[in-house]
Length: 436
Ligand SMILES: Nc1ncnc2c1ncn2[C@@H]1O[C@H](COP(=O)(O)OP(=O)(O)O)[C@@H](O)[C@H]1O
Ligand SMILES: [Mg+2]
Image: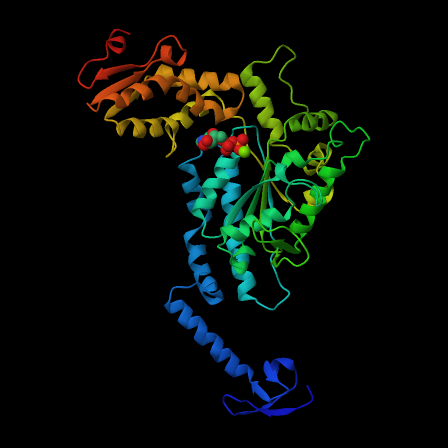
């Protein structure tokens, strides 16, 4: 631009043009130009109009942040998680704080727009055995938060060029969760489930054979974790040079990764044993409680070097500063999971049968038998619902045949497969219960 003074075509004011931004809109062919102040006015006008129509614009998003912070204090988030998740107190606290801090960082960034000053994000890694509540916890968290949240299964990711999904899929899922709003996407949370499945095979047992596939996925993820522009096409569109792409900056996206990391406690044990802080439980055959206790003690001591040994590249571990560990659920915990959470399996079946005019009752011993069975299956809380479903099949088939009020009692023998659940008229006393 060669001119140094100019008359704005809108307001007519004479402006000194020192740099490009003084005259943001200018057409050298016609000499038409709009000054910065007029552009600002137009922008605000559009924002106000959008706000009137209830659209959330940048200003709207910013304006709601203060509100969101106020609404999503850690103790409030944790109280919500408590309604669904039994035990895992520390993990619930860590996630509540992580989500709250994520809001705070966003507010700080917007309050200090344009400055270099920023608060770094703290991505989280969650470890815990199968069926202890990792995925459940994150999916409940996602329902509560007013920021976009997407879960992607890391085990489905492959290195670019291989059959399967590229790492960009994780960002694309978030983009859809954000209603295709790029700014919202850039401030969302990505949960990568089954993260342990992309560990380098050569990690733990350390054969020298490399595992390029998984290492490639990790390298791809690393770029996202470090913050970079990720480009992807709309869903269903094949990647080809002309396909329009969407570009998202991952710098402010919070990443939470989780997995069972089967066997990591052995790595911790090896490390701990080398030091003098060995954990001893005697040398006799340990009981189930002892094994659980030992596992829980070990898993809470996981350190970055253990993850490295497991096969996660150190650069990624460096980007996951918060390590969050979940413990094994014992019989008492499983018993509580059956009945206490808002969506507890027992409550769900009660509601289902109530729709057919049937009152469902579980004997205490029956519930304990379910918990015991789940322990034997070694899949944490995962098998609870399936066990009940099996037992209930026949009655759920028979009940809808009539519509009169009835009750069904599930006994310990039912759970053990020794008898079928009985259907009683509502007012008839359950004899087996009275005589027991
Ligand atoms: N601590 C827990 N409290 C309540 N329900 C749980 C808990 N752990 C697991 N569950 C239930 O068990 C099932 C499997 O849990 P999930 O979160 O998928 O396990 P994982 O840790 O393997 O991701 C879910 O339906 C979930 O509701
Ligand atoms: Mg899971």
